[in-house]
Picture 1 (tube, rainbow, N blue to C red):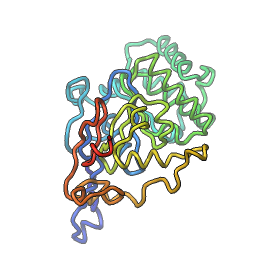
Picture 2 (cartoon, helix red, strand yellow; picture 1 turned 90 degrees about the horizontal axis):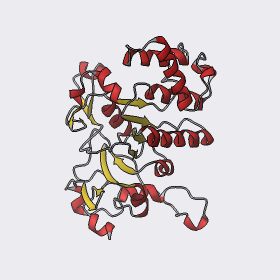
Picture 3 (cartoon, rainbow, N blue to C red; picture 1 turned 120 degrees about the horizontal axis):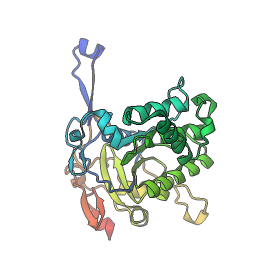
Picture 4 (tube, rainbow, N blue to C red; picture 1 turned 90 degrees about the vertical axis):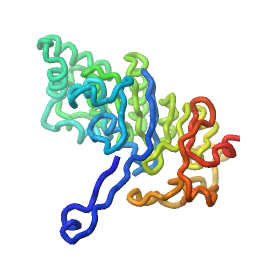
Length: 316
């Protein structure tokens, strides 16, 4: 997925357009009823990936498949949104401030189930609110009259309204208090088990992702650099970037703290990605070959893939 800059004044003065490579070489699968966590630093392409899957962005290259067929085979955006929904980071800006909860949910229900009568829509609306832990008595309120946690529950109810098979949750708890975060995370887990909905859970908090995900994909500079079952990734991370992220997780146990844990340096310019391994400029284990050869995402063990030229050494 590429974005082109350099329009406007830059074009007038003769500057060539620059291309930002937001996503490169991304290949992922999500199973029925699975919770796939996607983690990485800000700017690694997590949100762009989610928006491509949800149909908000059209990939410049490659193909997204849905149940074995190209996603485009589902038809237009309305048809796609019946199968794939998205929950955004900020529940206040993602809700219409001039519409009540009832109006927002009725709009979705009317668009996706126009044959239903008013009574059925009203019953379904109340059912959705109860499913996400809200009282139907709140349905006439506007978003500003709700707490942050309540607003995010409304966003979840709106995403559930078309009865989707997949929900992309883009940093859905990062704007909430810690106690409310736990409630929303538990709600996602309950919905996955009860309704069989698959989730792609985009976040930067590794502890949250570890708690909720069956599998985790680690992204760096627009690429997936490692995928593995959650417990496997935390017990035996292979890629140096994954190892650095996990080592940097704060711990209250003094014996588990790692001095100076973390990853030095900044993300490279996505408009000028390195020729070899994208992480070579920040990796403490870099070899000369790493700066020349671009590694493939290759299996380490069953269900565990890593994009590193030293997979065998780090997996040992």
